[in-house]
Image (cartoon, rainbow, N blue to C red; front, side):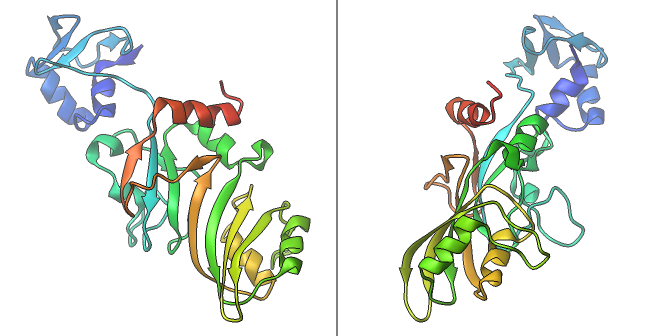
Length: 242
């Protein structure tokens, strides 16, 4: 059971104060009866709730896929920088989602956001071996020794040894390389630091895949969409939540 005002606030009808005014105005019906008590307890999955005659569809959790743009940080709030939450519409901000892991400010690509804390934890925990695949441009040539170094586990500048990763060289010349990198961890600046350990620098980084879920090619940078039921089930399945 949930308080009526909380249900409506979660669905983006405004703050608790705003919702209270809406309820007091007589604009809300529960099971075809006008309700003016914002403290009323309802089952949002079973009760028929209408606002201004329009029936609402309740959901507790929200799951979003964003094509994160350059220059935006993966945080819920910041005093100085634009965050990925700032890119959401009010109807989605109302659910108070948070990024699943992080992408660096200058890294673009697939970022998941949700208010499902259990799924978030499992997706970012190395315990569940969730692959994250990146496309990167490197400022130097790469060879099979670099591929082997990834397979054996790169040692970062702080002495931490990464779990084995996969480095696929798409093309390489004397000035630049294009690669795909697969890792299962999410250490701070991890991909960049892995290449720095090989005395090379990442000049462009884009996440393509998270847990087998590919970035929607129809999403321009800065755009997002809700995951489909099939995509949500897929993510939960790889984390053994189904």
